Length: 424
Image 1 (cartoon, one colour):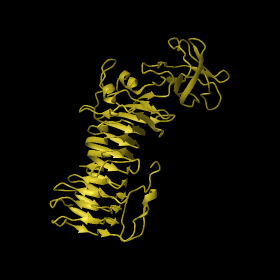
Image 2 (cartoon, helix red, strand yellow):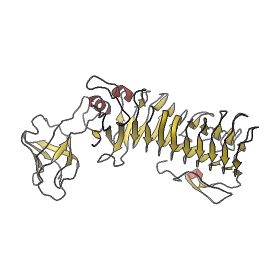
Image 3 (cartoon, one colour):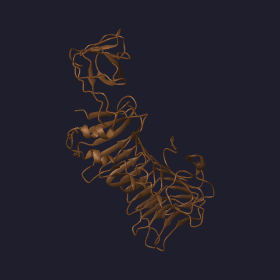
Image 4 (cartoon, helix red, strand yellow):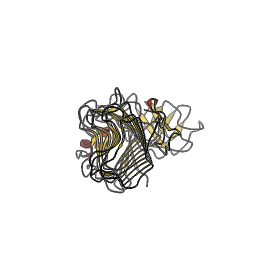
């Protein structure tokens, strides 16, 4: 069984959140190329034409699936489109059509009975931001029209951007409209949410732009513009391939299973707050292959217990913070193959063990350049501390311009991959 799909196009003219969506199911329609007309007896009786309406055609003989603008309604049997739906200019039979998209994300969620067998994907069209009126959790809990969303292990909720067809990589925009509330604060029952291909931003003074609960995924998203923190998570969550910036306090924090392939950036207009704030605060199992481009006051990774911090590229502009901070008694289980540069300001550290009881069970092959203190080891000697080095030249091709590909200096082992981020 296929996942259930609904569509949202925030650009729809005149949408007020009360719905301009017509439900039309075609089972034996014909399309006439010469007139660009779609015909089925009685199919359009309940439809009232409004300029700008579109219909989604899912398939048919020689049909190109996609959205098509409706030019007019001729009768209860016929509508006229503005473009040919076929690939060979024929007049195919058995065309089926899905419903037109909603114009408002919150309204769409409130009208939807979620598929607890196969899961539901809410597709948000790229091009125009969805401006929220409230935290999306409010819409997910709505019981006025349908039952509230009750997720299960096998039925996730996807919220994903698209351009022409679902899952095509288009990036949908969700803005808080500077309304000082989060995009989403998932309750304890709202788990298994997947946020994909989205730009989520502009939430004013909200504490967190996103708070996701257990077993959730954030992938291929841009997260920015909050005076609080970017993302807070429950347990067993994943964030990957994201660009996180303009978060005044912390970039991400929580119990992620993995934080991978992300870019954390600040600077003149991209920040993580005062010294002691960090791009990444994680009691996470794995923090791997991320890029950190930091200003002079921010930390990179603030580690909790038993995490693995591996293959990250961390750069600061004369920073007074630390590339990696281990504060807890256990510290990280493994710190390996990280490349760190530029914490050369007063109090700057490449790798900082804050307390004498902080240590790494294994600390291997980290390369540190141009830091006031390269590695601040506690009085307890780290077990298996092998191959760590202080470099005399940068480990990066050009970190200041965003090229983090490693260079052949010292015993440089690894770093982030990919070595740059197109949208950063």
